Image 1: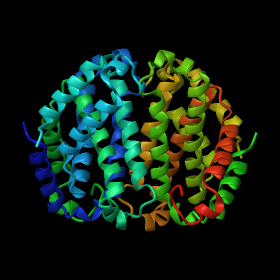
Image 2: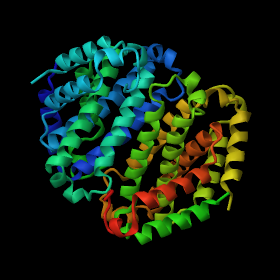
Image 3: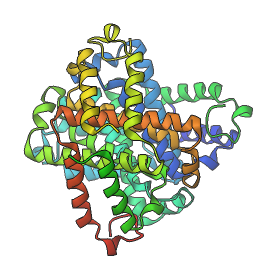
Image 4: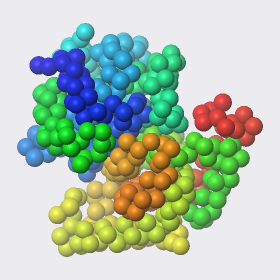
Length: 114
Length: 114
Length: 114
Length: 114
């Protein structure tokens, strides 16, 4: 499997070949991310939660969902690279923070913060 | 650096310890992703594009941005894991599609599709 | 009830008093809207659809939802005003378009486009 | 100009004719709103803020923006109607809250909360 670094390296080359760095300031990339997140949400907006696992396995829907999730991920990687952020480290840090914020016992089976 | 697989494994454990799988159907995770994307966008909404690189380096803003970008990434990883999607592969496939959709010569220096 | 024009007039005054027109270019207002939409989505992300009507009536949740929906509406009104768009007319036009796009017979009981 | 009540009445009829109330629980409508907000953001994502007023006046872009802003407004009106919320009142209440949160003197010319 490609690592985050591999994917980022490919994206960097893709952008450089098209001279798109000029459009990729952090503000614009945040908007790109939000618009791609909107497209992903559109896939599930009228799907009942209870069947959303099954819908995610139907070939046509799955192909679109994979596409949208990839688009979101690309926006995330482009933004992290642009601002020179170690994304894996940021995720690890956030998981550690969340572990304090949502203690196992108090959070078990509760969707929102205790 | 942690790989996508490592991060996903930690998230899976985090969720299992709290018995949160019941809340994490794909529909709900898509909503989680959209709400986290909204928080990231909030960081840049009144920042001019031309200074958004500089703002992304200011320690206080940077810490919040890293946090929000991590939250988005966590939602992406949780959703990809839930629907059993090889995210790195989906990103590679999308980059390949984009290379066809945005040919280098026709796309150079143009922000939107030619 | 206040009309769209009344609400817009109040918002215009609110913004002018604070000299905020400088921050309210259409791009920034689109981001404001997206961030407020994200906050609204957060209210429902772990609520099953079947109980989302009931949750919307619980006083504490209802107050937050009213607040978030008002924030989204404010962003919509600010953007429409900034670009000098007759919002009511745009909505009427869109309903007319949707009536052609989703013919009654073919669309009945189907969530997505036939 | 149509009032909020007029627009809501038309939407209610549009939905009833297609038997779509079943899909329009508050959770789904919040997702609809987020996906439409994402489409609006897409119109501005690579447009510099300083030219976003001018872009909003170009006929082709303007038609798309009017369309997307109408879609967001429709989602807002559908959700407010579904949860039986007086939207104009909610906006008035929020403007009053914001007036306290952002006092004129302390907020003048500052984009974020003082």
